[in-house]
Image (cartoon, rainbow, N blue to C red):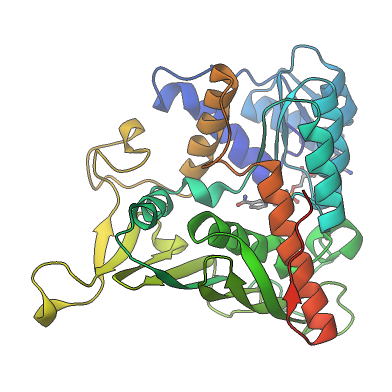
Length: 364
Ligand SMILES: NC(=O)c1ccc[n+]([C@@H]2O[C@H](COP(=O)([O-])OP(=O)(O)OC[C@H]3O[C@@H](n4cnc5c(N)ncnc54)[C@H](O)[C@@H]3O)[C@@H](O)[C@H]2O)c1
């Protein structure tokens, strides 16, 4: 594990739960080593999370032959080099999003890891929310008919204060971008996962606090290869919104809508459903039935799960692919998915600069 803070904790928690919650587990994780910068803090993290050892240098993990899976929960500037090095040392890898600070960096990581043949995944964990997986099943079944719209936004409020400390997320060298790569990348990934490839974007970016290096908010109108159009918004300036990842998909026969702050629910409108014209509208589906996605691992209906459990599903998926020598795609985000999301991010920045609609150019 690289990183012991927010994601280091979320991923370690999931590794510890897999063999308890899912049975039989695909593989039983053993927490071997954890790396971070602050010696005392990383020692504490190793003791708290149950790693055999702590180190101040991620290269120790790459050199450790007992380690078969390298989990990169470091800041964005530490995604490429350690992930590539771990894969070249024969370790399977999972890397937090965004895969790169730019599309160039993401492409380089994708190609160099791909060449090693290890299993590799980008940690777009929201694909592993049961309601999101159900939404994909509904869209794939054709029940919504022709898809016209994807409307996605990711709203937080935590850096409005002009005196907010200079954390790495505000440092352009480390983060690459602001709300765009931090939050927008999640919306872009879900847009691609649910509706398909994005072909063009008209974007704008805003930095509200003078002197800040990265964008505080982005807005984009997008066109999908399949004909749908949509909007993508990401901001850390939406007062009152804590972690509001929200999207809606509208098709010719129905619509579905989701809000991460109510992650066990999916709003569903099916135009042709009973009781008919006099009682149309959205209804709330509690996605906790035995036959709902991932629910074989959990509780009786209505005994809801939380945000941290998306990581249990995500890492269970990766361990299953490793055990079976199976594919991470289509439900896990591949490094190509991470790269393609980065191309959309770059196109939003280009469009914001040029003031014109930009094509997204995907390299093969
Ligand atoms: N999938 C999600 O929902 C989600 C949520 C939050 C963050 N993330 C992503 O996860 C990554 C980490 O974010 P976070 O919120 O956990 O950050 P964080 O600041 O909480 O933790 C970063 C960790 O990296 C370590 N670190 C920083 N610089 C280092 C260096 N030079 N060498 C070694 N270790 C170093 C820090 O000590 C810390 O342990 C980011 O890329 C972020 O975009 C994803």
